[in-house]
Image (cartoon, rainbow, N blue to C red; front, side, top):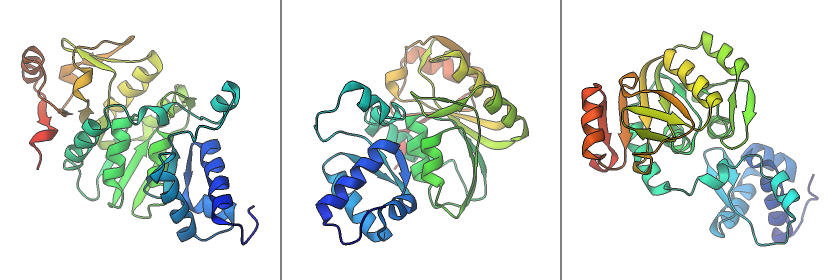
Length: 271
């Protein structure tokens, strides 16, 4: 625990160390660890965010950068719980537009199943503060809602996949047997022809189970994924209810989407 009356630079340095070590952390935990008020934590995090070390999210913070101090490779990797935090910056503007558009599909009181991923993470930020039931296998998304008293949060168990910060495997799939959601929001690594792909079979197995447990299946995918394949086939387009993206797909893909009966929402069309 931090000693009282520590100077702000020293306190901010300790805050930086904690966030870097934990990857994602709730504001309440930081306040307790540092023995300071929540408002003091917020001021220190604002300072760290201005220099690009952290990103504030609803109820917490995630580590996104480095201040350039010398760290050996093993230490750097040990302090990075999952590479998710390094992926937030890729296509972030497009993903945020997609998230804003997708949030318009949600109304108060709904039960949502939200798969892990950076685009779904931005959606979670858009939904913070609404009265919802949220089921997720994503640790970063769970952190968004951890201190939100309007959200009933259910986190699936399972094996943690470091690259995405998601919980996978038989335990997560068994937990999904008891879940019945109005809408699933998920993302993929690529769309090629009429087929959706993801990075590995564990991700695919979890997503297939999620799709079976939801009435509506909404795919959030940025346009950089068009024409791309990945290791594991997820499903065909006709399993998807709605696709939300940031730009019109190529003519052939748009034709396939329509033939599959999918609703297509272009984020740039949303005011």
